[in-house]
Amino acid sequence: MAMHSSRERPTPPGPDGVPLLGNTHELARDTLGFYERVTAEYGDVVGISVGGDEGAIVTHPEYVERILVRDDDRYVKGGLIEDQLGDTFGNGMFMAAGEQWRTQRQVAQPAFYRERILEYGETVVDHAADVGWPHASVVDLTDELSALTLSVLTDALFGFDADADEAVVREAASAIGAKLDPSAPTAFLPTWVPTPRNLRFTRHISQLRERVDSRIADRRRQDPDQRGDDLLSLLVAATANGELDDQTLRDDMITFLFAGHETTSLGLTYALFLLATHPDEQRRLQAELDATIDGDRPTIDDLPALEFTDRVIDEALRLYPPVFTFFREPVEDVELGGYRLPAGTTISVPQWIVHRDERWWESPETFDPDRWTDDRDSERPEYAFYPFGGGPRHCIGMRLARLELRLALATLCSTYRFEAVTTDLDLATAANLRPAGPLEVRVRRR
Ligand code: HEM
Image (cartoon, rainbow, N blue to C red; front, side, top):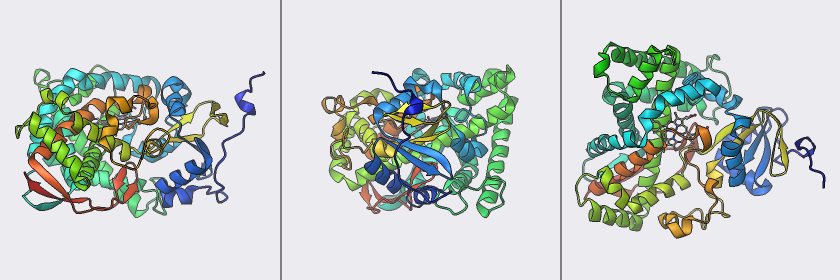
């Protein structure tokens, strides 16, 4: 039988859209609902149209693996990402391509080696032990944990004290979030159009750039022998020997501040929310902690014994993946699931759908940490779960994030008991999957 060339294959089926705008409006109004509806109706490869451009949603783990791993050289991050995040991340590691990306990844890699990551354990526990929530107080998890993960990140990777920079970074984060909110009527306008959102974004990003420049200058003034080997020192050294230019150094700092801060904080927020709303599972976790650390500070040596803690984290990342989708664009026509996707199609690979697909997950909506026990975990395709992406562009901070999530959860749950105040979780989709409003819990010292 003759093989069909990809040119003869049909393009994928999908919902009809409004002329010109396509599915943009529907997608913006209820992003997650739109993904759910169209993948339920049209299957693993859905054709959509966003802002007049061709798009697709791909949700079979085998195709996800092909895009990210096996055929990764046929895909780039693409125009949509460039339009949405280019103004923030410049040519930093998240955005860069080809040799420029490879150099940045190689320069930063030693800060993320396994042995190096283990050294950050104490920093995580120091900051988590320091949250100082009064007994019986109500706290907004999103806010509190965002401050916590920011201090861990700046302390561990950049060696500076987050307190001085917290306001600048968090205001910039909020301005970026507002700019990327797809439900805003002005969401798709370029940054130079002077909407209030864009003006606010430009003001906060330039304040952040100034602050980052001054931190870089501080480090350069230090005696090279005293600089240590944190990420900032690695980047500064790479500009001195010509591997990176100054602009890329600044873009990388901003990339790491954002890629590493809100994602980790959301992972921790959802894990604690799930524990607060599932008291039995919280008691199991606390029993594991009492048996292992018995009120002491956890250390990296305790991690192998904290099996249930680890399962809670995987289950939280499955149900509420902080990165709920990301995008790729094929550089040539490709074939997936019998359909042709032309070069330049914006392909979304949404964890939100794949992590909740009944074909791979029994009762997918249920918080069930025990689904991660070895016997139940082995049957699933590898890319039914990819909170950190995959292939060469997988998250460079994955080990750090996992270490931080485990140690911070262990420290907080051995100190406090969490009672749900907010019981219904409304979600908002901007750059990351965020709670739409405050996510409150009552904390009691144990
Ligand atoms: C729970 C926490 C985190 C989640 C869910 C997460 C998720 C992801 C995902 C899905 C990607 C791939 C995006 C794509 O392929 O388009 C990614 C890339 C990246 N992440 Fe993370 N991340 C987390 C924590 C961190 C941390 C702690 C850091 C740094 C300290 C970090 C830095 C980065 C960078 C620099 C990239 C781009 C890598 C490249 O393109 O080579 N992330 N992350």
